[in-house]
Length: 460
Image (cartoon, rainbow, N blue to C red; front, side, top):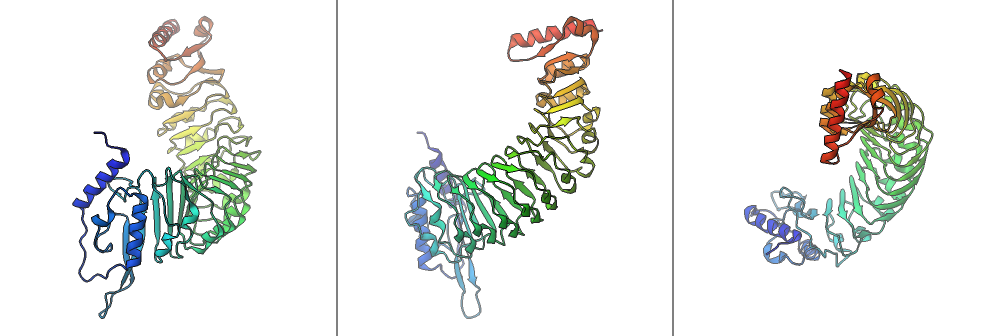
């Protein structure tokens, strides 16, 4: 008999109850009846197929499913046992190591104000719970001011918008990703002075980024990727000196990249790719971001040269400058100073000149994309380098670029993409002007191999 995906999660969850039962402490106070009943009602809304009340008939602060967390809100003394309340509610089976109560295929919320029953709730977490039945984000607007974490991951039936009431919470972490939530970011967002993470990716948000985002002095992660945001990046964003990740990719932001961004002294990941930024060039101020590890600007018409700033950025592991309208040469300093670089994408630009032989020194690189430029001269890579990078070495679409006959076999063996490249040898060029190496079929492999052998024979 076939077991559905959600049923399998429920089965694993029930087994985990038998193995990892939680025993109560005699002196521990009981959870009040209002919160006890409210937890049952939430569980029954999210998965009515599981008999929650019979599985957990006792006090939920003594024996509760994983993801339901109690804690003292009044500490015990010599004369009383103190008070306990629900502090965390996490729903949606994540893994065997994090077996939250599984949500059913028709998860919903029958009482939109149910979470007002938990005045001390600090964390509310939903993973793949609202997938079919529409659930409004406003159903969670009645949570108390104690809430510190509000997390929705991959809940496509969640809809609605953020309102200014969000500013009345004490949020440290706000994650809404993979939902149908839309609208603009309200001004109340800028009043969340304790906010450390705002991940609002893969939704339907629109509008501009509020200027008062600069008030979020504790913010470390700002991810607004894959939405419909537009307009300029606020100049005040440079005041977020604790920010380590800024991801605005796949939106409609426009204008120039503000000079004030040089104030992001702690930034490690900067992704502004696939927007409509123009005429900024690659910012020189990147050199002032000494902790930068990843920078992605692809898909914006920035233009200009690749600045020679890499001596100050030795910790960088990834550079994405695809299709940004770059001209001029590739700086040799990239190969000299960026020994930790694993990813370099300079494709679909207007780069000219020779490929610097210093790029051979990039011992950690596992993807190098130079295709569709106007590079010329010999490809300076050894057979060992070509074999190591393999099919992630892309150089096709450079008509004046040629390859040494001694490394062709390395390209062939590693399935690297040469496209149509000249052989850097006049004898070979006179006999066959272009070499097209491809391996889409057995016949293609055989023909390519024969051509390579023929050329090498004539070269030698």
